[in-house]
Image 1 (cartoon, rainbow, N blue to C red):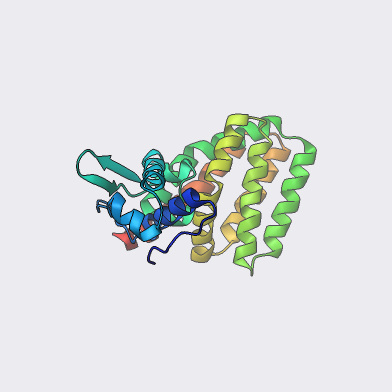
Image 2: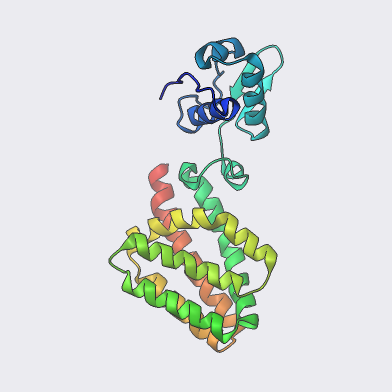
Length: 234
């Protein structure tokens, strides 16, 4: 996609948006020098100050780096760019997603254990309703993944731990990406079984059983991802 002349409304934001899109779409590749300030001024039909401000913002976002006397170069983007809110989850690589899964295998069993110690009957009922929606959506993977993600959100919120809730919200979109891969790879059966077992552990307030069940669930998914998706990428 090429650059286009800028409309006179919200000029700075339009320049920034188009330059960011050039990077995200791969038109400006990692390590590549972007057009000079003068070239960008001519292309956009805007002042040098506007272009310079856009470049400075992209540097602050970690997408560009400026070398004194040379110009600005594309830094690319990674998992940190996603966490900062710079890029959507769809732009993450297979290795980025794997990093999140490696984090989840430590984080989510801990969340399940916390939940077993603090969950209310009302919160369990919400999770049961969400699980039922998962069961009813087995033939519609897109809807199934929505309810799968919602189950994990409810589980985390039941801990009452604000840091855990924040982290869960940050990685929610990445989890959606990996959940799609798992569901399409081996179907919804494993997830439904494990989620039911987690609910059973919560109902009994069995902290260790909740922890172990969640570990098994995430570990199963991670091994599948590692043995299929990552090997295919290599």
